[in-house]
Image 1 (tube, rainbow, N blue to C red):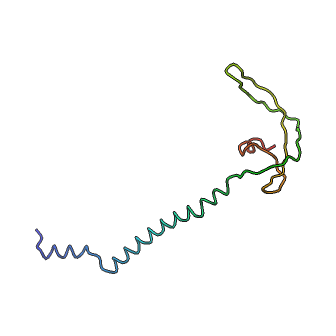
Image 2: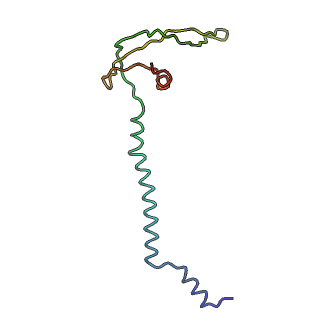
Length: 118
């Protein structure tokens, strides 16, 4: 068994000095302030930046429509017993975009643009 004096020495060995205590508090404060800063950065700066990357609705004026001579196959359904496949001409429709005031090739969505850039 340990005597009372030995127990006191062990207990004193685990106590922090005032400088160590301040250092620990400073470290915890820096960690907490870093986490809070990340949340503020994410909500105030990153979220609006990501929303700007999304497409915006714009008014477009048709400038020209051209049939480029290619046909594409389209499957359709018009009821339980009505299904089929047809060939449709491929059109290029150029529009004037009201947001950028630039001439652009019209696509239904980004997926269509990536699969068929013509």
